[in-house]
Length: 148
Image (cartoon, rainbow, N blue to C red; front, side):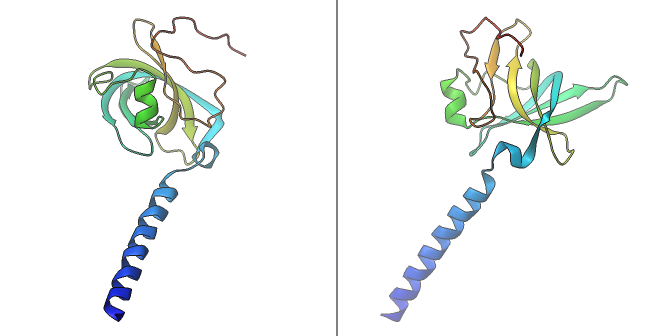
């Protein structure tokens, strides 16, 4: 009997630990990003990480001095991006894009992505819910909302 109880307690403990790690990984926008530090980059996609709780877009950005930096942009969840029109083939390595977002508070080359624009003008909304975005762009959107 004590062996079964010990096994049950250990199983529940491992389950709770996994939940705690998952909850710790999901954060509020304001905890990591600064809404007062907008960023705009043009660059080339190097990879997409389709992971929960957020998708990450990585891109090479050429600085004015010619050097290249790799930036990572947090996006919404995979499910949310799929519903907005993204597919795993939408942003293959080598795709040129423009990304607007908000810089990480810690100063690293990371940002919360908001809007993604393709060279032909199509726009997609990258942001996760709760970023304070007043609108979302879908693949069919051609009209850009007015700036406030």
